[in-house]
Length: 126
Image (cartoon, rainbow, N blue to C red; front, side):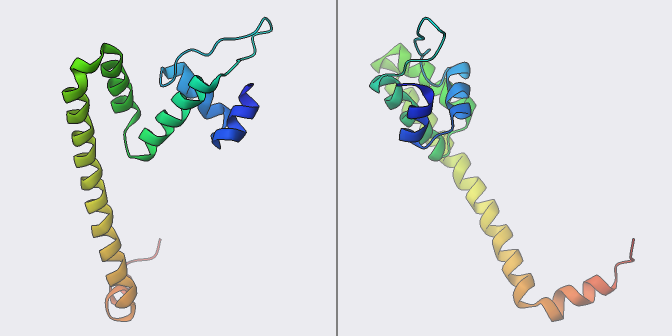
């Protein structure tokens, strides 16, 4: 398959697929005599795996570290689980921060006239 077909099949842009290959989130993809990437099902599985891990909240750096551990074999399973737990903790902190921001915004919306307007009137125009 070429990159256009893989992009359509995975719903991941060709630019993202190229980026994943460039930074090592997927193995190097073989190319034909014209330099065109020739993806197989294994390549597609790697693309989908990397996207799923990113969608689960892993940073690029953490995913690269995870894949390096994966390449070292099963002895790194505890380290991989620890990395995922650490990423989960980081994600929970971001969720908590966003929830707090959402709560503040909800308060401002619900109390706009009594809270926001009086404070706006204290501001000087610029």
